Image (cartoon, rainbow, N blue to C red):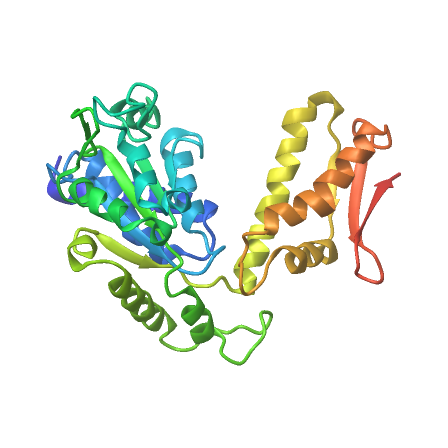
Length: 338
């Protein structure tokens, strides 16, 4: 294939992956643009030997899409957001707890009863027939004991982890994601120092300032040899209201699909007005937590009341159900249209 044609095909494939991810992760295109090339290198079998396919540190306030990015990538590559080997670093704040990752050495008490959390088998289990690229997520890495980052040095540098029984795990066919809220408070102040959530307008040069804040926090927390082994430190911007509205729409569309898929011939049509969507936006988003509480707000204010009506026989198959906000804007009203 001529060089120009090959480059055009690569560009189209890269754009298609970026398009699929951006449909699932709202408002963070710059972050996705930094991740996609590493996926493409793996797919082209051009990833560097002796290293993970990619190592990323995702920074930014809670609820901006860091974890959602990894889930979206799992959906696109493997067909399910669950195809992730996830380590919650909050569970490894004490030094002795880090041993759970690699298991106890032979001869130690409880060796046979201790199953390592990071094994070649578990790594292979999150890959799929669609893609051999495993996704590994270390969530909230700043909460882990210092011994975890020391343990990860070998993984990030040589793609090898030595377990307690002296066997090894190879991470060459893995993308490793580390998420952190380091610098998040300073980032929120930078984005909206004197304004409330609804009036937040990103100041000029915000992206560069947020990256500077994030890198400063990272360098204060982690040793240089650890930071230098990360391929890309990516800073997620606080979501603007327009992006949060898109996320509300996505969540409602997901609920509509869920109704049709689960109820099948008992399904009904759901219509959520703009006023109701704004209610859910206010109830499920904030400057501090972004969109993190949105699913819970939709579950509480919409899914659970709908479920109660279905269980009570008030909503029948094929019904048209309209969701509005009450006049006092204190709760949602669910009505069955004639």
